[in-house]
Length: 152
Image (tube, rainbow, N blue to C red):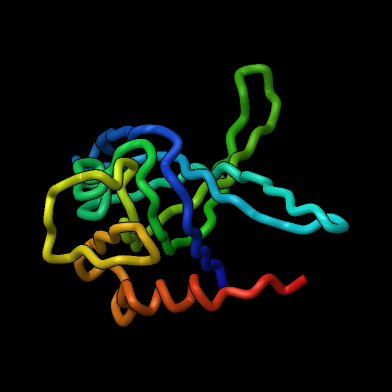
């Protein structure tokens, strides 16, 4: 079976950091992903919100680097948590467990910090997290975004 998710979205809140009993770090955050679609002659936008978790070294790095408003590209898988409330009701929640994350842009693009890993997509600065998406460069992402066609 295949369980693969690739999303580009913006963080809706600062990451939350917690630790497992083993001492491994877990970093949790939410992203907003927009979908544009056409109804008649009008374009509409719909926003979806997804909860994301990362573990281990990636969680440690992202917990330090990310803040609300950052735009990221993530790759991971869907996971469903299931539990039963104290009153016996069954509950479930689906989240994304990311294993690769790239920072595409910061919330404030007026930053004067220079970084050797920055590139440009359109008018936005791009800061790629090293070695997180092997074989994909900022230029590849920019080309994909520029050449994106709406299938309907």
